[in-house]
Amino acid sequence: MANEQVIINIRDLATEMLAPYPEYFVVDVRIKPTNNIKLFVDGDNGVPVDKLVAFNRNLYTRLEGANLFPDNDFSLEVSSPGLDEPLKLHRQYVKNIGRKVAVTLLDNSEKEGTLLAVSEEKVTIEELIGKKKEKKTTEINLSEIKHTKVCIVF
Image (cartoon, rainbow, N blue to C red; front, side):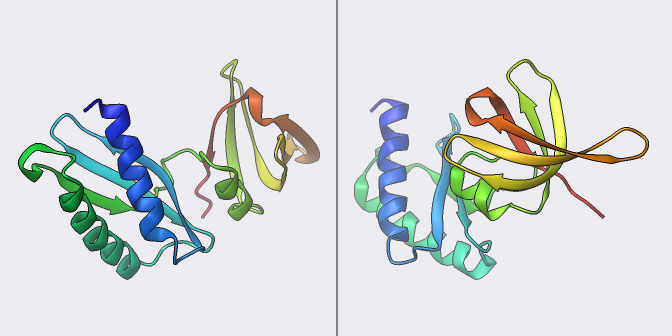
């Protein structure tokens, strides 16, 4: 079975598993050549470790029953996307309103600021410009964004 179809099947199984928990959602599925499956799950208010463990056990059983891998030769990791992972879904942008983000545009330029608002078409950030840290509100079309990462602020 083609890798893309396996990813779709795993995503479907994971989405079905999360259906009773509307606050959680699938962000990404990746499969390494060694059949190591990585499922990234996020939540509107984060995901507790005990939930990730329960999701891992539940999905592992579902994958065994689905026979997607010969002799069930696979390993599974279920985690929340770390801060090093870019935001992929509209829902992730919404949950990070008020946080500092770094937005890389398609031309590889970067804008950094506080995420103020998100719509279906664009994000609004507040940048601090110059030595005087003047506030500038910038709207960026989602179609112009290469990736967005949440910044770690101490």
